[in-house]
Length: 517
Ligand SMILES: Cc1cc2nc3c(=O)[nH]c(=O)nc-3n(C[C@H](O)[C@H](O)[C@H](O)COP(=O)(O)OP(=O)(O)OC[C@H]3O[C@@H](n4cnc5c(N)ncnc54)[C@H](O)[C@@H]3O)c2cc1C
Image 1 (spheres, protein in one colour):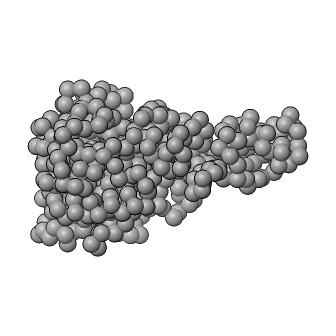
Image 2 (image 1 turned 120 degrees about the horizontal axis):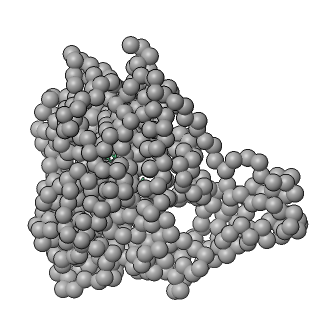
């Protein structure tokens, strides 16, 4: 017999299959040996009250073994003889575009400026160790894109449940834990993501597709009003319609498009700092217990949002049990971001704390105005951080009180920190709102506003400062046929899952385009 149960249970009861079987036995009056398997379909934590509960939806197999797969897989066939589509960029947008192309019988040729995901790891280590930023291989560039060395959080605001579920199932097919199908806030972890990404690449190649690393698109090949392929820095050109999934840090791509008068527009962004607290403190606040999260609860998360003087101030990309990382992709930049391993086991909790910026806040004749503003802030951060990858930092309460921090608490940021008056050199437009925002967050969450927390500058790469204009129906560029601006860099996604969904959409657009040729 198969039964589904919706239960509200204690964290220790939800800890593993054995403890869940005990609960099921109690709830159904069945003895444990008859309960052959328990599958968790949905899981979320309710920490609003003093007693913390886990809400679970279970599928229980009594006197029968499960014969259904734990996830739905896609069959990828050989497409060696299919028409070619060029995918520029091997981030989640590009990789999921390539997989969808294969499903449609088309042959993806992926070109990626950075290195494969393992080689890339060495360059990332050099940023912390030697303060060397390789402008082609870093936290933004390389196989897996900006999502590879991240938290691998897979929640999204996308309302398209079907599309989201498909992406999560594909992640499982390539090696992610099936817990991502059940958790309200699924995440993979930076330690597990590289293997998943390699498995996707191996699948693309097995099906007859190609993946070229250290191959940067330098120009589009344009015939009349149609894109026919790309030229690369290796001297090799690739021909076919182009899915342009280059991410929000490929500023050279934006400059290239603008110089060629290919329509793009400025898009709102959000900028601010990474805020780092001891994880213990966040656990104590969120779980209302002095002893912290204990044995059975995960590292606690938070999410804050408010409005200050007409602009949003909010926490972004929170990484419980994580690390603050140096995410610069070029010289004279200090940019920070966050990542965490699958066990979220570090002693720190971090999140971006950012202020919304709209194009009208920094009027410019150029669609690159907000991108230049990002660049300016990143250079200021580099100057104030000691002109290497050490980052400028200030204690949270000192920032509120416009005081210098004379010492800094221990931090997860490995290149090192330099005490710096962020309140002084960051634009008042941002600092004034952050100050008000922090006061409010400190009121709704007692203990959050504290000098134990550290602000690290600057967080600027929250989303794309540019939109590459495309048609809503065909996903083609508004003036160039055969060009499919895709993912976060094109301004149509924010985060791993939404970039992957957009990759699938653009692959379908390219499929229709080829069908009608
Ligand atoms: C440290 C960090 C942590 C993050 N954590 C999360 C998280 O937990 N959850 C989440 O949802 N999102 C997270 N994000 C954001 C997420 O990574 C991005 O939203 C997502 O990767 C965007 O996907 P994309 O494919 O559109 O672009 P990208 O991932 O940016 O990929 C673009 C790719 O294009 C390549 N490229 C650029 N220019 C060229 C060119 N000219 N020629 C060839 N290749 C080129 C780049 O090298 C890159 O690999 C994080 C980002 C960072 C940096």
